[in-house]
Image (tube, rainbow, N blue to C red; front, side, top):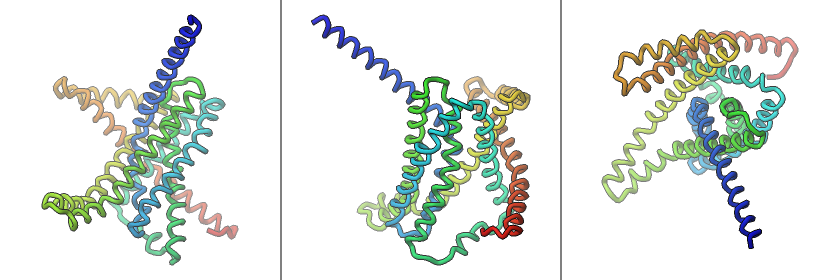
Length: 323
């Protein structure tokens, strides 16, 4: 009998350890996911355009297929790659993270540049060669999954850098939770966004009560503005997160002057408001300055990318490489 009681005690102890491990994984995953906010918001802002132009009946299946591709990107490619880096080349994580931050800054700055210097960004859409709807759908999904791979790589790199060093299994479990949780959040949001106007239209035309019809009309009218606001928020988040990552990376490499200066300026700004609001103002001031740096960095990268693209194009023409 005493042996059975001892066995139950052992099982209870193991259960407590397992529960604590699960709590640690979830907590670490939540913190890591929060650090990747900029890329996550951008992912949610970018994806809806891949279902534009398709019949409403195809919107959710397309989103579902992109989501499955995203999960495969994260779990089958990026997670193992991240663990290998963590185990055998941890020194490479920060430079890769800075590279991802620079890419976020570039993407955000390009959107800002297009706002002030607009040009025809719809060329690929308007000149898309005609084809069967199924072929066009496959092309769109493939393009979305490729774009998702870049954004997912940023998210997983940010998450990996945010996870405290531990056993490889703990890191793997945390990254898996981040991958699944963020994918559900992003593509669940995308599914809601792409169907919101259809739901609003149905409520406006079929609603039994006047309040239902009024809400439906408000949803239909409000969706274009909401999508524009989402792009603005996504752009700001990219510049903030990208700038913050790059500045922190410089500090980690021994060039911490800019990071310390921004912290000092943020503290100085927060000193002008009552104590109850100082923490919020301090965070907002730091995020703003990180974003301004991110915008400057991104604007500096744009001409370099165009120059590199021009060289690549000339090389392909010279050697007869097909586009």
